[in-house]
Length: 615
Image (cartoon, rainbow, N blue to C red; front, side, top):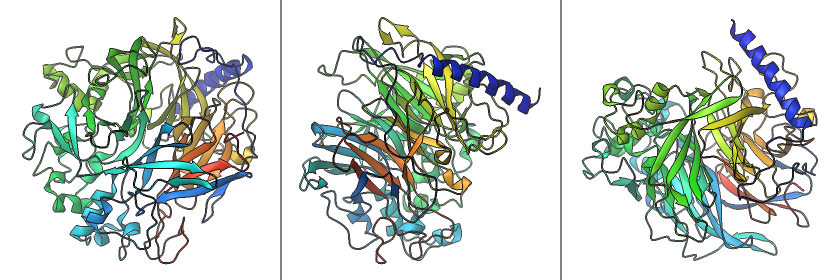
């Protein structure tokens, strides 16, 4: 059978099943995360007029909405604005970091005052420092202080914010404000803590890591902590030989990669000098934003890979479940199930992520699937295959999942749980795949798609902890008029000019609608943006474009206040386009000041006159 024949068969089954779900008003919309809570079978369509796709130097927002710049790279954690960039390395440790990604709003006083936790994923030295073109030969000339500034600009920021009559502001002199960066002390917890593969010359105990990097998406827990997902951590290390020693481990770039100088400035990032240091990255990091003196913790029970998302399901009386994707082509989708039982938000929950079982997903052609346990001693996960213990299974989760037969995915990224309990997974793209499968049916997927996972129901609650699940495809990205396998596929209420590609971050608003941020529209000639769609009823799979990013940027992690009247959004890497530099960027968003380079920034988006974002 040719690959195109396989694609046509899968596409036909998908369209037939999606039509059935649409006309039965959504088969999955009957069960809430909280047992016994009634959920409407249809969610309201957004009330704003959809934007058309395009490209411009500044952002474009749907009519009737306004976006306030809350803070940007180099600003103080008290909201003070910078007037000169770049900062020195020591100054950067106490300033808002670069390339902000995941956002977590932790209420202190409902929707009026809270804490924002913000990830900083990676640096772009040619847009951060003057005098560099972006090519490797140029970047090899970075000074030691510039490299140290890069290191200090990554990690995580915590700021306190408050809504006032004229908008949101960052609270000055907040006791909660702090930075977590590449030099912050972080405790190692769980099965891999203290293991020989986690030990280094600087930390022979294997219990105390230094820093967090590659901080992409993340999650929040109902007990008030924030989860940081470490992704693409191999980018920052020297030592391409590692992939030959440990096949299918976290990718380490060639010696002439962008971050070559990291290993020269700090020996931790040179694997020839510290071969175990990379094992200490690629985890989920948990911290309490309300306790600034408490050290973050790397939760090794959740496995090590290029984590995207750490989406939590917590039903009282049941184990906690955390969903996470491995954001690389043909890697896997994972689920962690805690050993302990969640007793509700009023009960202490410390340690629920310390012990449990990690699973990888296998998708069958018939719309069913199964979670496979990454448990030492089960099947191929034995000493005969170089897995002497559970810690090794978790450290090399990719190789373990491969041996178990997990389904290779088209880069699983954002994961969101609907009020009905369905799990939505963004598959951004996969340009180098060699074979399609039912859940990833396109032979060469350049536009991405969104999966819908339907856990079985037990006792009035979705059984996210069950081994079985059903699945469907919500939508397939791409232009609607593109002939062939990457033509978009949406619901009938879709506005033709509002199509999307390369879905990345996903969020549900308080009204139960799915918001989809993209990362890759530039390959089709347009800016990335943010779309909104119901997941059932007449508006199912019909996204409406709400926000269009400035040139070269992507929007990350739409996050709502509990009342739904404010959406916080990260705008990452403005001006990241070919030929763009510190001195001559393709846009100077958000300041449009010739004295400042383009700056990643946080927006607070509200509706003019008040009301829920999206209508």
